[in-house]
Length: 409
Image 1 (cartoon, rainbow, N blue to C red):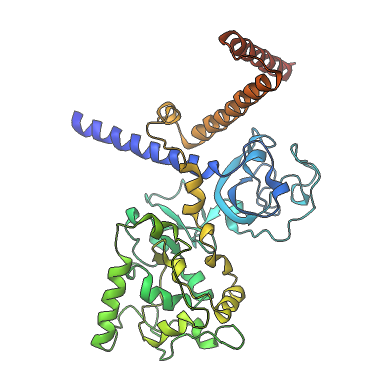
Image 2 (cartoon, helix red, strand yellow; image 1 turned 180 degrees about the vertical axis):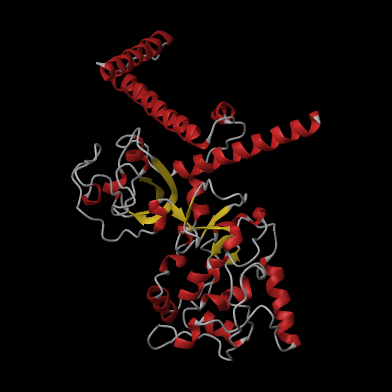
């Protein structure tokens, strides 16, 4: 019994440590002190929502890490993980009379920001909050790399790939909006295993594979509908062999750093050739049902000919051509320095995720203060002594006491 208890405690410790490391990775790429608004539409950053300022009846809005920490202190804040091409909304027209403390002068609206029900605290096709007090199922959630919504694994319409593969996921709705991706999925994605718990729909057979309209850059109409069901199999032994080869390529758990990061050095296609047409000509297909899991190297396989680039823009997925758009590339910013048994992790392993974030905010603030102290000493030509450090922190404590006492007057 004692051994079982110890194992549970170890599991909780590892889970907590992993969650904290994930939080550090997410926050590492965002500035905790300065509003990101001046940087424009940031390629990827940690985004938060404030239900105190923008309740469900208001227009959805997102704020950066610094504004969540400074402007909305004490508010009901919830994380949205990261969002691409997003500009901080704090204090703009979506907040009524509320003004950003860090950068008051902002446009009334960020027209290029994209919002979904996540900004109201709801997720997945079931449109439920997370965490959900009414949900008795212990289920993980995973983010689609295209729409950036979060889905319960049981609502993906397929079995979840092994977590150690750390694969990207595209939900079924996004696959249907960019149907040419089904061709790449047949060759490079994880093998499909359709969920039997999902209500079965009437089979719809189609003989035509999707094609990119070379002249217009769009997709033909028949490409937007599923062409196979989970019960169909390739009609020839040659296709069966190709299916096995594709599975073997995509199911490897061991990947090099180049494969994981999608090195730009890897050749994807010749400028004069269309990779998509070459793949379509091979006739390899897969069921067009359920979410699709991809290895991190899959983006480097996409064709970059002019016609395909037009198709990406038409489907609003042109960011798939950018290897630095991935969550992995963003999180690697937080892994430049090895964590090991980080003192911050040792301190917060028993805390809730909210408490962990509060400690991280404080840690970032302390780092900023210490950096400012050393810069001041260097500018004034002073020697850093134990007495000087002690005096500096005494002054900080005095300032904190004055702020605290002022709040009770």
